[in-house]
Image 1 (tube, helix red, strand yellow):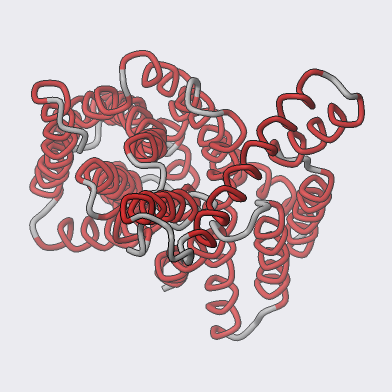
Image 2 (tube, helix red, strand yellow):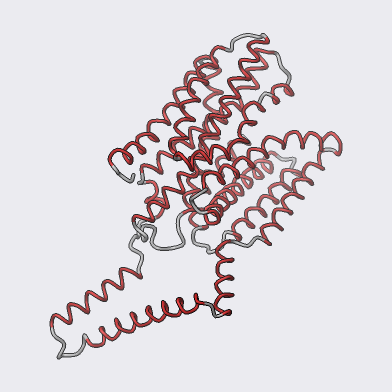
Length: 426
């Protein structure tokens, strides 16, 4: 129930928050708001004794995660550009995975040495530190404006160029206004009137947004975006599918206690620290190629889980080896697909600079869709594997996951094939 509350709040709020974040010049404000919400949720979780308070805290955590992930990834794109986006996307996501990796151990140490309340005090301390870092953060856009104003005060060559540009824009506006005034002259010829009308239309086309279609609809019409979102959904489904079923399986098969059941997750989460390498590979060879390879490698590994059936040292080693390879395969999925979403948006802007109305962009809304796909996977993964394991057994559950992984390859490869072979920018 608590996992569902987090995923539901994250899924529902992400599109709205992404739309809002794209209409704010600064990424700092939504990040600060999200961290304040996270602090409030942490306090509720720490002092809450009623189940409704605890569920409310998880809903606030889901809302906070939607804000921070959406604005944070959009800030990353604003900062690093597209040349090394895959690598830095991998760095960011590997730090997120590292947090998941070390937090249970740190939490256990704090709980054992200082007690229950100390855990939440430590969490609040980290949130306050993060808030302070967001306050002193200088965004690339703000730095560029500051540097530009410094150059203007210094009177360098850039000032002359800027002044010339502003003068040209002013002259163009004056000429058009003069044309409009002259159009009322009864002595103006028909051809002159037609030319003046064309000038007005050209000016309107360059100053008014061309697209009135909502950004979300424009993005969801793009096959490349849909393929990436489906891939993110499947990847997150595979990741979270083990959360509920692995502890139950190792308890029944290997008779492990909760401590050893928790340690086996290191085999899956440990390889996620190699996400920067996967991002660098996607920058070099293409994000869709790397992501497709990840899903292809994962499929046979998932099918091989069916070979783990009884308690023995060799079976334990086999399970650990399979899960480790799966960890590396999954690492090749998430960060390249996140980078591909940003690349798809950049491609759309290059094709038509007014595709999103010429506003502040669409990166926050793009990553809100990324967040929605993640949240849907968080909800679907444990639900499906829990049902399949109890109803059809471990082997059939493994086979369904293998087929699910292969299903993500089809749309990703199809969008890449259409672009490479036919030159379609889909």
